Image (cartoon, rainbow, N blue to C red):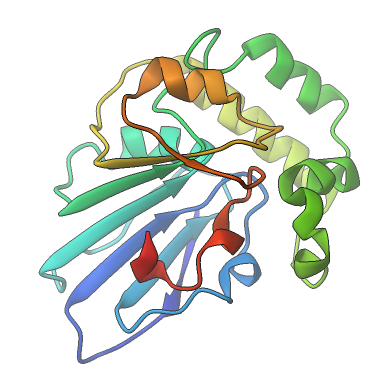
Length: 203
């Protein structure tokens, strides 16, 4: 797992931790600004997590898609002032509370990046034309790792303070979020809902 700061302010002791989803790269979030520190975790070809939170007094977590499942396990021992989930669930891959295992397995076998981008962004695809993606073989490897991880770690650890669900989501079933959480905030967006926001502080 990689991490990089999207926003950095040495005079601020507040941190926003972002767990991206499958295929995400720092280039996907450059339109979002903040005067706080924002660190993105991405690239799940390995799931080794290491980061020192001690320098920050107030920490908010924003997790997206399969990043919700990863954060649910990898960050279960950490305290956050606020936890926000976007188009994902704690289980990630599940017959009821996630993407169905059979569908996820089919996605691995027939994965096509251009098709995935169409579902990910839908009518916002032009805004994503300069986004960076890994090659398909590396992404298929990442899918396999996520599949094995999610099916092994079937436990709900984190309680989320705010959950966003996209009405046009073609990747993560909205019904899975409805079965997992109460008080969803619905967005008229595709799976990648981040164009709905202009800054990290709006979440």
